[in-house]
Amino acid sequence: MSSVFLFLSAFLASAVEFVEALTIVLALGVVRGWRSPLVGAGAAALVLAGLVAGLGPALTLVPIDALRLAVGALLLVFGLQWLRKAILRAGGLKTLHDEEEAFRHETEEARRAGSTRRAGLDWYAFTLSFKGVLLEGLEVAFIVITFGASAQNVPLAAAAAGVALALVAAAGAALRAPLARVPENTIKFAVGVLLTTFGTFWGAEGAGVGWPGGDVALLGLLAFFSLAAVALVKLLRRTTAPASAQLAP
Amino acid sequence: MKPIVRFGRFWWDFLVGDDWRIAIGVAALLGLTALPVSAGIAAWWLLPVGVMVVLADSLRRAARSSRQS
View (cartoon, chains in turn green, cyan):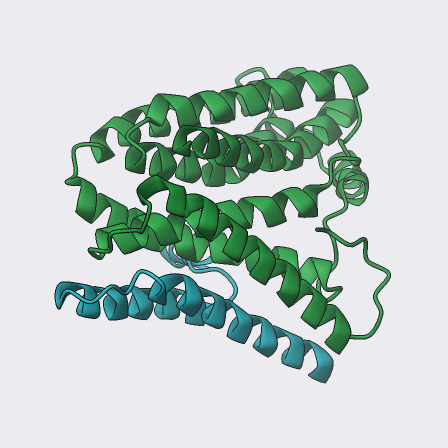
């Protein structure tokens, strides 16, 4: 069961981050040609893959209780950040991330930027694509490494991220447009709940807790955090002025 | 901004995020959970409940500052 959760969490988190990275690469490719942004994205993907390949197996050598305490704490802080933002967006207190607007902004910037060639590449397009994919992908690498190491299954978490990357890249190549219809906030909401669930489960185990029912407790935690998060959204909506924002959960 | 400051700020934003109280709350809750557990008391419920209290408090602060601005 935890393998299914592991795959789902890594897949969803990766997909939503790759959608944001795709917007940057597409905007650069449309305005400045495809070669340099694709080389930049490929270089960033290699750095990220190296990070996962290097740190993932190394972390599995740490004693499991200490690892789960540290990873649980990090995942909890990280997951609560995602959940907090998603709840604030769903509650109308934070603007939703708009891929079409981001695409317009990036294309405008790309048109205005000057042209410098280094190593046969359009340096602006290469560096922006590299940085964009690296920064968005860093969250993916973090989730893959922490989830994979704690579940002692880094390859499964990495495979989930790989499938997400392939799907997003294929959709981007087919559409040649930002994936604006992907319900990003809903996915971020779900990922926030999943990260919080795993962070709590592993963090508590690391602190010495024995969960009633073992792994089945994950289902109970998932239900508890989902219901509590939906209740917090409703509470926020009631206490704030009506917003025009799209509602997430 | 100096590169080292930028580097530190990046990792702070990446790991701690918009509300540092969440990170402090999580660390405190893990410590609080370990205490009764080490004395043999079943305290598995403490972390999930505490986590939601920390999140609700952070959201309450965000909502309040949003209303004030």
